[in-house]
Amino acid sequence: MATYAINGVQLGAESFGDPADPLVLCVGGTTMLSWPDPLCEALSSSGRHVVRYDLRDSGQSTTLDPMNPSYTLRDLANDAASLAQALDQRRAHLAGIGVGGMVAQVAALEHPEAFSALTLYGTRPVAPGPVDDDLPDHDQATMGQLFSRPMPDWADREAVAEHAAQAASILGNDPHEARRLSARIWDRTPDPSASIHMANQLGMVFSRLDCTPRWRERLGEITQATLVVHGAKDPFFPAGNGQALAREIPQARLLVLEQASTALPGPAVSQVAQAMLELTALP
Image (cartoon, rainbow, N blue to C red; front, side, top):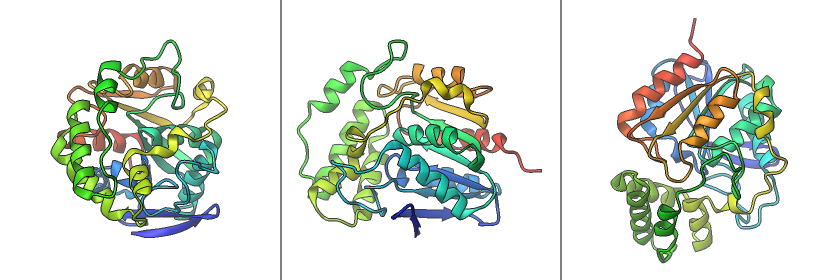
């Protein structure tokens, strides 16, 4: 674990593998733990230096007021490019999951010199909020179940972990893994206040973040080798969103995980790792 001074903030990061190996930079969604340990280990054991990091206002990165961010999606994209170049002067493979995938798309467009490849998992080509007419929106029945539940006591670690496990069951993810992950996120949150714990668990900052201007219309400008991975059972960003990304990004490869929802399941790790490695094969 380390922190890096980037663009006036501190970004918490964790590294796997040899820093001399080509860099794979994993954008948290919003904390770094969205990227599973086994995936990071599989990539690093195959000759990649993997660094996953927390976005601003999450994990061990600078946290001020997640409900009133003073920065924009473009600032988060700039962070990704600046961190990549601070870690390795060579172009990096950039990977983003969920809302981190939005950061990764914009970073690839705004900083093509920093990145050689792009992996997008469980994301979409538009910002949070109203979706384009041709894209599938959140499954309303699932969202009704998810958001009709009472909030937990965000100052109670066990209550928060149970809330996460229930959400996983509704979304079609592994509730046991979700409980474990929630507890890890809790333990890494340096500020004990309930509002900060809620922000870390739910990624609340994206509900308030300025994501303008749109970038979907520019996806054809992406020149990096691109892998789009999507869970076939994802009710939050249904698979049509990943299909749209793969259509609109030149030469993108689409990998649909038939048994996956929003989280990357353990049985799919080796398949995803192999597909990522194939994007930037070593000589």
